[in-house]
Image 1 (cartoon, helix red, strand yellow):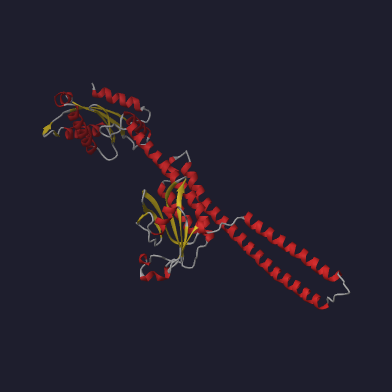
Image 2 (cartoon, helix red, strand yellow):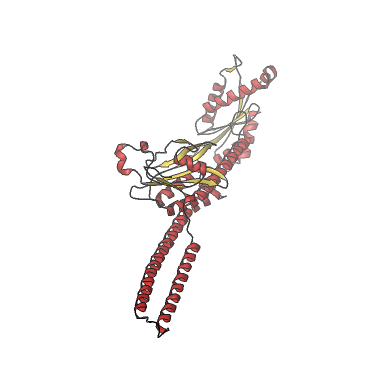
Length: 425
């Protein structure tokens, strides 16, 4: 596509050279050279050894000799020129392969971390993969600015990652709109020579306007993921070689993004499942299993001398009358309000858990039994305040059982058993 401002070249309009094609052309050139040499030798032999007394070859021989020499020189120049062209094409193809390999290698570490099944803390998320793709493209192509636009809907691209003074920062583009939209619609990489929308650049940036750019689709299988755009530095002009290398990279980058998305989705589902398995569904507080784990950690952790791990079990007195008189939904409302009040009543490092029904637990540290008792008194005082319920206020009293341990030898199960016994004694 030609324009007064520049040129857009699609990959399908560019011939893709191969080493096999170059070898075939070189073979054809040598065959032509050999045929010319054989013909030259035959003609010269005919002139030298064919002697007919009736015909004078003196003048004709000179003309033929001169013609053969000129032909050989011209063909030699042609052959040398073609050989130099083939060598240049071979070097360009090797440079392209080196560039493509460098782009591919830049994703290997990211792919290894994405697909690692071990420590989830070292897995890359989607944002990190996008940054890796964009940064390695910028480095290897000497880019001035770049962006990655991902499909937001069936007909819209949105910029999710950008660097430099990219005019695509925060952009939303419909398919067939602009270069990126055309690339997304056709799934064909393009090489852009010249800038087509100068409105993105202020007058003070005239000296930094890129002379060329590359835009390639990010594809995973048959699915379009998005578009990668790289704008060249002012002194850099991208070539068809760069376009072909980036085309291959676009397929690998698209697969890496899709893999990262898949793993991130799995991790979120796993995190959600783990959260649900370790928390009470009604109040969102830790359940008994999670509290037991936290008690064990508290008992094993080093504490200041004399400090104790304190575990309180708490339940509301006569909570059953709420369920019986107002229904279970009203009872659930009271339990949620109670959970919120307990969380506000304890310190930031303390833990509140819900075992089900009106049974709650509080894990904290205290200097001694007096400080633990004071904490329990404060918490019971907060719970004595009325709870709003269906347009009226309801008051409750609560019972609490306290157990503490100042050593690291006690097991978590024993401390919990002691707190339960203290509650029901």
